[in-house]
Length: 159
Image (cartoon, rainbow, N blue to C red):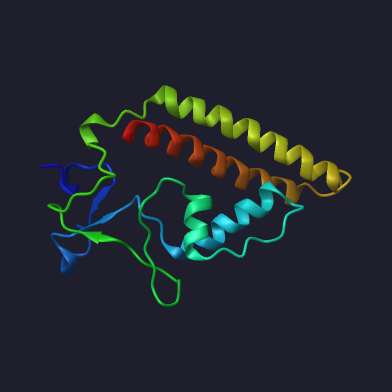
Protein backbone atom coordinates (compact mmCIF):
# COMPACT_ATOMS: atom_id res chain seq x y z
CA UNK A 1 0.00 0.00 0.00
CA UNK A 2 1.32 3.46 -0.86
CA UNK A 3 1.29 5.71 2.17
CA UNK A 4 2.62 9.01 3.40
CA UNK A 5 5.54 7.18 5.03
CA UNK A 6 7.14 6.70 1.58
CA UNK A 7 5.97 9.97 -0.03
CA UNK A 8 8.27 12.84 -0.94
CA UNK A 9 5.68 15.33 0.40
CA UNK A 10 5.66 13.81 3.92
CA UNK A 11 7.67 15.64 6.58
CA UNK A 12 7.82 13.84 9.94
CA UNK A 13 7.16 16.19 12.86
CA UNK A 14 10.10 14.91 14.88
CA UNK A 15 10.54 18.27 16.60
CA UNK A 16 6.95 18.23 17.79
CA UNK A 17 6.85 15.32 20.23
CA UNK A 18 3.18 15.89 20.98
CA UNK A 19 2.21 15.11 17.39
CA UNK A 20 4.31 11.96 16.88
CA UNK A 21 3.92 9.78 14.88
CA UNK A 22 2.07 12.30 12.70
CA UNK A 23 3.82 14.49 10.18
CA UNK A 24 2.80 17.14 7.70
CA UNK A 25 1.99 17.01 4.00
CA UNK A 26 4.02 19.72 2.28
CA UNK A 27 1.99 19.49 -0.93
CA UNK A 28 -1.14 21.13 0.50
CA UNK A 29 -0.77 24.93 0.62
CA UNK A 30 -2.24 26.92 3.51
CA UNK A 31 -4.67 29.79 3.03
CA UNK A 32 -2.04 31.93 4.76
CA UNK A 33 -0.09 31.65 1.46
CA UNK A 34 -2.94 33.22 -0.52
CA UNK A 35 -1.67 36.79 -0.07
CA UNK A 36 1.81 35.82 -1.34
CA UNK A 37 0.24 34.22 -4.41
CA UNK A 38 -1.94 37.30 -4.97
CA UNK A 39 1.16 39.52 -4.75
CA UNK A 40 2.94 37.37 -7.35
CA UNK A 41 -0.10 37.55 -9.65
CA UNK A 42 -0.33 41.33 -9.22
CA UNK A 43 3.37 41.75 -10.01
CA UNK A 44 2.99 39.48 -13.05
CA UNK A 45 0.32 41.77 -14.51
CA UNK A 46 0.65 45.30 -13.08
CA UNK A 47 -2.37 46.49 -15.09
CA UNK A 48 -4.72 43.94 -13.56
CA UNK A 49 -6.77 44.50 -10.44
CA UNK A 50 -5.54 42.93 -7.21
CA UNK A 51 -6.87 39.34 -7.14
CA UNK A 52 -9.82 39.08 -4.76
CA UNK A 53 -9.93 35.28 -4.83
CA UNK A 54 -12.16 33.00 -2.87
CA UNK A 55 -10.21 30.03 -1.49
CA UNK A 56 -11.40 27.89 -4.39
CA UNK A 57 -10.47 30.48 -7.01
CA UNK A 58 -7.06 30.87 -5.37
CA UNK A 59 -6.38 27.14 -5.55
CA UNK A 60 -7.57 26.81 -9.16
CA UNK A 61 -5.55 29.85 -10.25
CA UNK A 62 -2.34 29.65 -8.22
CA UNK A 63 -2.16 25.90 -7.58
CA UNK A 64 -3.83 24.13 -10.51
CA UNK A 65 -3.75 20.38 -10.11
CA UNK A 66 -3.21 20.45 -6.33
CA UNK A 67 -6.14 18.61 -4.81
CA UNK A 68 -6.10 19.87 -1.21
CA UNK A 69 -5.35 22.92 0.91
CA UNK A 70 -5.54 23.75 4.57
CA UNK A 71 -7.42 26.55 6.24
CA UNK A 72 -8.22 27.90 9.66
CA UNK A 73 -10.76 30.44 10.77
CA UNK A 74 -8.35 33.37 10.61
CA UNK A 75 -6.51 32.27 7.42
CA UNK A 76 -3.38 32.81 9.49
CA UNK A 77 -1.63 29.47 9.59
CA UNK A 78 -2.53 25.84 9.09
CA UNK A 79 -0.92 22.51 8.29
CA UNK A 80 -2.29 19.24 6.97
CA UNK A 81 -1.19 16.71 9.59
CA UNK A 82 -1.16 13.10 8.43
CA UNK A 83 -0.29 9.73 9.91
CA UNK A 84 2.53 7.90 8.12
CA UNK A 85 0.05 5.14 7.18
CA UNK A 86 -2.36 7.58 5.51
CA UNK A 87 -2.26 7.60 1.71
CA UNK A 88 -3.59 9.77 -1.11
CA UNK A 89 -3.74 10.12 -4.89
CA UNK A 90 -0.94 12.73 -4.90
CA UNK A 91 1.63 10.23 -3.59
CA UNK A 92 5.10 10.58 -5.13
CA UNK A 93 7.47 7.90 -3.87
CA UNK A 94 10.53 9.52 -2.31
CA UNK A 95 12.86 6.89 -3.72
CA UNK A 96 11.36 7.26 -7.19
CA UNK A 97 11.11 11.03 -7.31
CA UNK A 98 11.89 11.88 -10.90
CA UNK A 99 12.38 15.64 -10.75
CA UNK A 100 15.99 15.52 -11.90
CA UNK A 101 18.75 18.10 -11.78
CA UNK A 102 18.08 18.67 -15.49
CA UNK A 103 14.42 19.43 -14.70
CA UNK A 104 15.53 21.91 -12.02
CA UNK A 105 18.02 23.52 -14.42
CA UNK A 106 15.27 23.92 -17.04
CA UNK A 107 13.00 25.46 -14.36
CA UNK A 108 15.77 27.90 -13.39
CA UNK A 109 16.21 28.87 -17.06
CA UNK A 110 12.45 29.52 -17.36
CA UNK A 111 12.52 31.52 -14.11
CA UNK A 112 15.55 33.54 -15.19
CA UNK A 113 13.81 34.54 -18.46
CA UNK A 114 10.58 35.50 -16.67
CA UNK A 115 12.54 37.43 -14.06
CA UNK A 116 14.50 39.42 -16.66
CA UNK A 117 11.36 40.27 -18.64
CA UNK A 118 9.50 41.51 -15.57
CA UNK A 119 12.55 43.47 -14.33
CA UNK A 120 12.94 45.21 -17.70
CA UNK A 121 9.22 45.99 -17.96
CA UNK A 122 8.94 47.47 -14.47
CA UNK A 123 12.18 49.43 -14.84
CA UNK A 124 11.01 50.84 -18.19
CA UNK A 125 7.72 51.87 -16.61
CA UNK A 126 9.57 53.83 -13.91
CA UNK A 127 11.79 55.61 -16.48
CA UNK A 128 14.82 53.87 -14.99
CA UNK A 129 14.66 55.93 -11.79
CA UNK A 130 13.92 53.24 -9.26
CA UNK A 131 15.04 49.65 -9.57
CA UNK A 132 13.78 48.62 -6.10
CA UNK A 133 10.28 47.87 -7.40
CA UNK A 134 11.75 46.21 -10.48
CA UNK A 135 13.94 43.97 -8.32
CA UNK A 136 11.00 43.02 -6.07
CA UNK A 137 8.83 42.23 -9.10
CA UNK A 138 11.63 40.23 -10.73
CA UNK A 139 12.17 38.22 -7.55
CA UNK A 140 8.45 37.41 -7.33
CA UNK A 141 8.43 36.46 -11.02
CA UNK A 142 11.46 34.18 -10.50
CA UNK A 143 9.81 32.38 -7.58
CA UNK A 144 6.49 31.98 -9.38
CA UNK A 145 8.04 30.77 -12.65
CA UNK A 146 10.37 28.30 -10.93
CA UNK A 147 7.60 26.90 -8.73
CA UNK A 148 5.25 26.63 -11.72
CA UNK A 149 7.84 24.81 -13.84
CA UNK A 150 8.60 22.30 -11.07
CA UNK A 151 4.88 21.80 -10.32
CA UNK A 152 4.20 21.14 -14.02
CA UNK A 153 6.93 18.49 -14.03
CA UNK A 154 5.53 16.87 -10.89
CA UNK A 155 1.98 16.96 -12.27
CA UNK A 156 3.19 15.31 -15.47
CA UNK A 157 4.80 12.57 -13.37
CA UNK A 158 1.57 12.00 -11.44
CA UNK A 159 -0.43 11.35 -14.61
